[in-house]
Length: 360
Image (cartoon, rainbow, N blue to C red; front, side):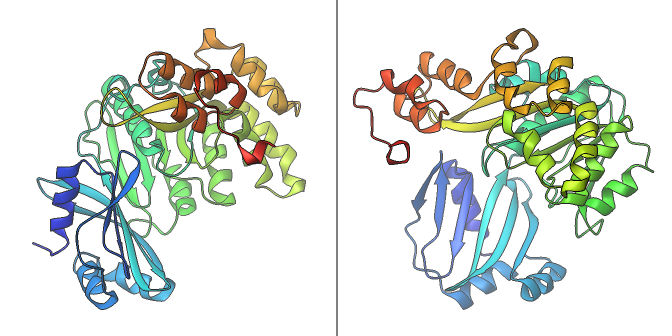
C-alpha cells in the first residue's frame, strides 16, 4: 500500500471530489465545491515528491522532470480511480487528484435534462459538452456513452488524457485509448480512428487546432463524435471554435461546422441546499435547420434567441435551468445569482441584492 493511499481513503470517507497535495501547504480536499484543509503537517517538497513518485509510472516521472507537468490515472482496487496532475510551483512539487467514480451514473441519476439521452442515439454529427473545469463534463459524457452502450450495437473508441471512466462493453464494442500511453496525441489517435471502423468517437478534449479540425471532419464524414470545450455558454461555443482557425480557413470551417454540429450542452454545477452535493444546470443548443442556417450565414449572435424559442426541441438557456432549480428549492438565491448570466432576472429573489462592481 502506497503512503498516499491514506489520503484517498480520507477522500472517500469525506465525499471529496479532489485532493490537493502541494509543497509548502497542508493537504486540502474539495468537498461539495469548497476547499477544506486536512489536519496534517505542511508538506515538504522532498517528502511529497517521494510520496507522489511511489504511484507515478516511470515514463511519467521522466516526462514530468522534463516538462514540469504530467497527467496520469491511478487506481486503488476496491476503493476508486483517480485522475492525477503533477506540476511544479514556486515551493516545489504539487499534485491534484480528482475522483473518477467507478459506477457510471445515468442521465436520470445525474439530474440532466431528458433530451441528453437522445444525443446518444444520433446517427452522426458533432456533440459538444462544454463548461469550466470541474463542471462535470466528463461525467455527462460518460452517461451519454453508457446510454449508447445499452441501446446501440456499435464500435465506440474513446481517446482521453488520461482514461477516466472505463466502460464495460454491453451491446457496443468499446476501446479506450490513452494519449501518451497508447497513442502519441489526440490528433494522431483521431487520424487512426478513421481506419478502425468506428461508429462513435469520444475525444476527451478538443485542445488544439488540429484536433478540432479532425473532430469536425470525422463528424462530417458520417461518425458520431463527442468532445468537450472550456466555453461557458452553448450560444458562444460556435464562435470560439471558428476563431481558433486562421482567418483564411474560417469560412470553410464555418460551413463544415454548420453541416456537422448536432448539439451543444454547456453546464455548471450548483451547490444544493436541500441535501449535500451539487446539481447541474445546463444550457442546451440543438442544431435545428434554423440554427445551422444561422451558423452558415454568420448570424451566431441570434443563437441565444434560438435557444429561448426552441423549448419544443429540448433547448433551454442556462438561466432557465438555474431558475428551475431555485424554484424547486434545490439551490439558494445567492447561488443562483452568482452563477446566472442575467443578474437582473435573479435580483428579486435576493433579500439584499449585492452590488457587483463589474456591472457598475
